[in-house]
Amino acid sequence: MEEQVQRLVDKAWATYEQTPEDQRLLIGIAGIPGSGKTTLAKAVAERLQARAEQSDPNARLTAQAISMDGFHLTRKQLSAMPDPETAHARRGAAFTFDAAKYLDLISDLRNAPGNSILAPTFDHARKDPIEADICIDKDVRIVIVEGNYIALDEELWRDARALFDDVWFVNVDFEAARRRLRERHVRAGIVKTLEEGDKRAVENDLVNGKEIVDKLLPVDEMVQSLEDSNWVHN
Image 1 (cartoon, rainbow, N blue to C red):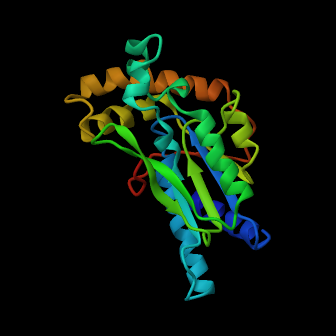
Image 2: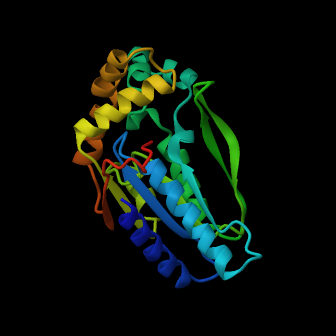
């Protein structure tokens, strides 16, 4: 995995050096739940920032990773759906996200590079998003956005995908993702037992994963998620 990460960092930096100063470099990282896309996004952003500081010790924040999790519909919005029981049970599926609002953010990042932009995050304790909780400063030139539906071939999602300079997909075996997810659900306090975590993984996460794979738009990089003791999967 280390070699893959370094190659992607090198590629992103080379692209960044060719990016006009009045533009941002936008990188999207897609993948099914449990693939490791969050960890990859953070690792790449941290290494790009370190490289920027090596080039200029006075460099401000240059590279930033954000998640699309802040675009989850609220529990109140899910309850207002025609079938609220299914909506809550399937939370995390594409239809439980505000795709239009997500597209607005990516459009702002693409078309307003001189502006600082606020984005939502997701509070797992509250189980709801927090509006305008993170700032992408006007000086941030490289933005890495990770999420399940970055490359989903559906209305609005495909419009957002077209705005990225580079899109990567983290490929993972479904059984490996299942093992990671059931353990993650227990650690996060979503469920109490591995059995409950496995049920959630099979009935929701991996159902979403199949849709992600079946409706995958063309991507620029396929990254293989490997079992690596030095790699923490999110």
